[in-house]
Image (cartoon, rainbow, N blue to C red):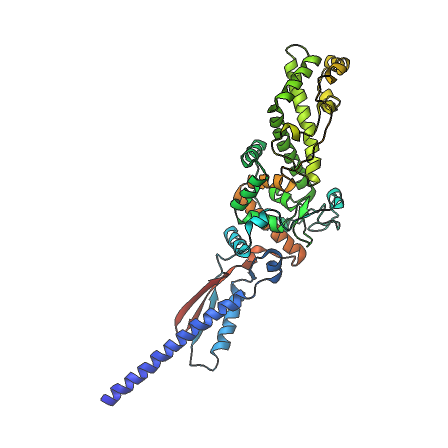
Length: 434
């Protein structure tokens, strides 16, 4: 009886040790297999956007794990293999939260303040700025010249329907842009807002181009990527036109504000209005002169911004670029005056000239915001989720354009999860990029 008892204990110990050994081997191998799956990250995605993700699906990963399982357990202790089952749900790169987390990991260790200052960005050549076509040459997804994305249009419905932001729109009022601009106040205010706004803003600065500057030498499908983020249209040129329109309206409102804050300009407007439209109707003429002056100033601002020069948000008298003389000679004002006022303007021009301060003058702007910083005000004013999804759009579009025509973020994963069956027990393994 003692011998039988001892034999049973020895047999039981062997069984237990074997089970523990199998469990240990499964756990060790399982952790190694998760690393093997994650090691298959897409290299172009990493090189271009510092994002780690691998292409796959549940069945592909399950098949790989089963292969690893058969190979690793061959010739070892008797193991009854029940197979492997992968479930990657929740790890899709196309999920906005996963994408943002991947971006954060990619930018880890980078100095946000340096990136936000525009370091590494280059100014486009004059040819790039001027050579903006408006015709699509008829390709399925859109075609373009060699000028860096100029004039490209996405026409392929499948491409449009599979964009992360598909079906989502976003808009902001000019008043909200003006208020945002007044809140930020200066170039330093915009830079601080970029640093504090979130990782996706730094990602935009680091990887995307716009009509005036660019960050990467690699050709992108859209040249005006910042403008796409703001407007979200499938036509590169139309996005630029719409952004320039909003930028014009924002600058015009800021210039009106600057004009009315200058007592000398206000006094000059009152005197000129009284000279050409005496009486109660002079109030309407005052508004016409002020609006025409602000418009003329805004046109100068737009030329400066597209030439990558700086323009203050709220201008002082010394920073004002245009004189009233140019306004009085412009059709912007004359077209809004009645015939009597036009005649008085011509008759009293010498007297008006004697008022002073109406000759054109240009000052050199050392302070203020450039085109990038003006656009960043718009980007900061956007709905955060729409902004993030449009960033994802650009990544997906460029990956299609540069490498894989069928690239889809929902088919790339930032982590893995699978279950293996061995000797009637289930072992679950899960890991993601760190």
